[in-house]
Length: 151
Image: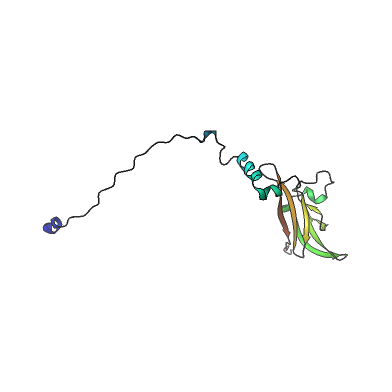
């Protein structure tokens, strides 16, 4: 056994010499931090596709009289059905055990949401919210029909 152990010679490749570390000075102190709101705002203003969306054309109508359903957030509302009135589909929205009729063009929610389309199962609307840069942007939202459990 000893003779066999002595006869085996392992072949190990020598380890290459490590690369020399050369320290670099940090010169980014004068630059804008990558995750700051200012950087996001400058990028949003610089992009031609978002300039159109964030222009002064998109703003909530602050001078109009608020409708009753604008006092509630969208998650406090539930669509419970729809009816056809005068050839137009009207959604039935329940808030705090009260039932409201919602038509296209009505306002819902606390983010200046305006109803675009009503189907038998869904109310789609467009909300106007401020982004981190303070610009007004549009975002789609929907209120889908909720089945209530019978008691």
